[in-house]
Image 1 (tube, rainbow over the protein chains, first blue to last red):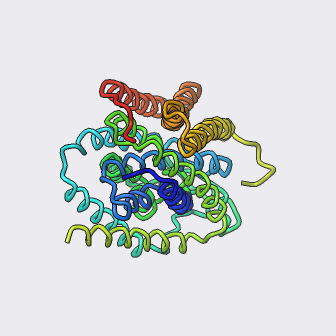
Image 2: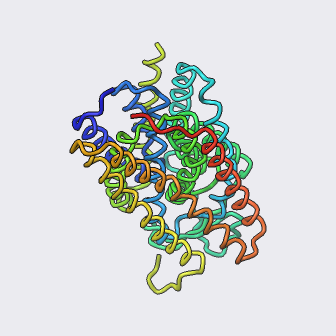
Image 3: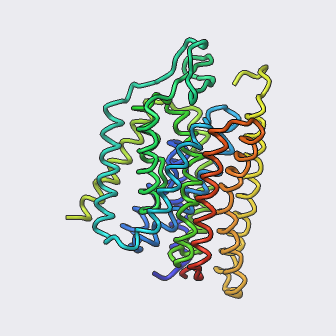
Length: 275
Length: 109
C-alpha cells in the first residue's frame, strides 16, 4: 500500500483514538488499531501486528509514567506475571510465521468474545477490602480509592490462574500484536481479586515489556512499516494522555461496559472475516 | 493518595522510572515526527529512514529501562522472589534482542 499523507493522517487519528481507549482501559492501543489496519486498510496481519506492538509499547510507557504516582501499580505482582507473559510473547512471535491467517482471525474472534462475556457477567465486582488491617498476602496491596474516599486494600488470589492467563495473554500478544492486557485486566479483576484500576495500571506496565519480547522479532523480519508505525505511535502518545485524563473521572462500571462493547465489536469483525 | 503521606522508597523509584521512561518516549516521538516530516517533504530517504528507525529502537528499549530498575530495586530490598522474577524477565528480553539481531533486516517501506 502506498504511504501517502492522507494514509498517515488517518493512521495517526486512529492511533490517537486507540491510545485513548487503551490508556483508559489498561489494554494498550493494539486491540483497536490492529483490526483497523488489517480490515480497513487491508494491510497483512503480520504488518498490522508489528505496528500494533509499537503502539502498545508507547501506550504502556505513557500510562506507566502517569499511574506510578497514584500507587496503583502492583510491581511485585506485575513482574511475576510478566515472566509468564514475556516468555510466551517470545514464543508467539517465533511461531506466528507458521500459522495461517484464518487461524489468527479465529484466535482474535475467540479471545475477544470470551473476555467480553467475562466482563459482562462480572460488572459489579470491586474486590476491595475496606478493613485496612486485613491480611493482604504476599502479592496484595493498598491504594486510595476515589469511589469510597479512603484507603482500601486487596488480596491477590488464584496466582496459578493469573500466571496461566498471563502466559496466554503474552502468546496472543506475540501472535496478534494487541498487547496482553486484553486478557489480563478482565481476568485479574474477575477471578484474582485485583481491583479494576490496579489491574489496569499493573497491566499497563506489563504490556509494554511483553510487547518488547515480540516487537524486535517483527522488526527484524521487516514486518514493521516504519512510517505507519511512526504515525500510529505519535497518535497514540496524544491519545494516551487524553485516556489518562478521562480514566481519573470515569466510574469502574462504565469502564467495564465500554471495554465489553469494544471487545464485542472486534470479535464480530473477525467472525465476519472468517465467514 | 493522601498528600500528607511520605512516599515509600518503592513509590520514589517508580516516580523516577516514570520520568526516565517519559523522557525516552519524548526523544523517540521527536525523532519519529522529524522522520515523518522529512519523508513528507520528500527529503533524503536515508535521513528520514535513520530518524524513523532510531525513534522506533528507542521506543522498544523504553520498557527495558523499567525492568532494569526493578532488578536493581529487588537487589536493594533483598526480596528473593522479586530478584528471581525480574532477572528472569530480563533474560527473556535479552534472548529476544539477540534473536532479533541474528535475523535483522531493514523494515518494510
